[in-house]
Image 1 (cartoon, rainbow, N blue to C red):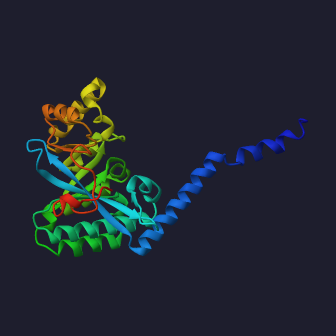
Image 2: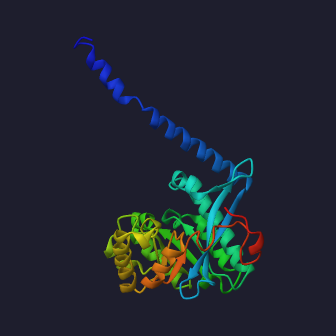
Amino acid sequence: MSKRESPTVEPIARDMASPLDFAVAQRDRETMTMVRQAVARHDVVLAFQPVMQTARPDRPAFYEGLIRVLDESGRIIPAKDFIETTETSELGRQLDCLSLEMGLTSLAEDPSLRLAINMSARSIGYPLWVKTLNKGLALEDTSAERLILEITESSAMSMPELVTVFMQDLQARGVSFALDDFGAGYTSFRYLREFYFDILKIDSQFIRGIADCPDNQVLTQALLSVARHFDMYTVAEGIETAKDAAYLTDLGVDCMQGFYFGAPTIMPPWKTPQTALRA
């Protein structure tokens, strides 16, 4: 190839998407289509996972309601397969609304239930989400004090000032807040001091295998110290073995969550534990 030809070839090569880029984009389009169709069909459910009291491992402190969609064949699709793709879109706001609506209905149906529902900070100013919240809290007088809203660390830090005001308003109404996936992102400790989260959930990457991992032991101890300093209730996520559960009990974690204690189920386990379906 001559020097005269090369300038026209190189820019074209740089502008061409790689096969991997194309595959990822195609996968994301297919995911959005699948979720959009599921929402249109109202094929959306909550899967419930227990969060156990460390002092009473036979008794859930509360349950977490995890959003699931059903594809055209009825297969249950977990949030990890679509939430990142939909997070910043209108579809993500619709999923947050549906999740909140189903959670508040569950709280209204069972006055003894305490339930955590995930949300994105992007839904704070979304009119339908706010309307859904106010309508749901009016269904039962104690719903607000039994509702926990979970916001991921990365989502909260994307708009800290807005999240702070939002939390203060709802905490005054009795709603609690959990900081989800703590340690997975880049927390500004200045904002952590101002947020006043009620619950801090330590990300599973620090918890799995902790009994045999000195690095995770040190990191988890540090995260627990932060939570205790700010007077936050602690939850260790992603526990899969008795050995890890025992280690975390000795460490003083308030609550534990993971497959060791129970997989997410689409049938409310407090109603029909023997027939609950894993999801």
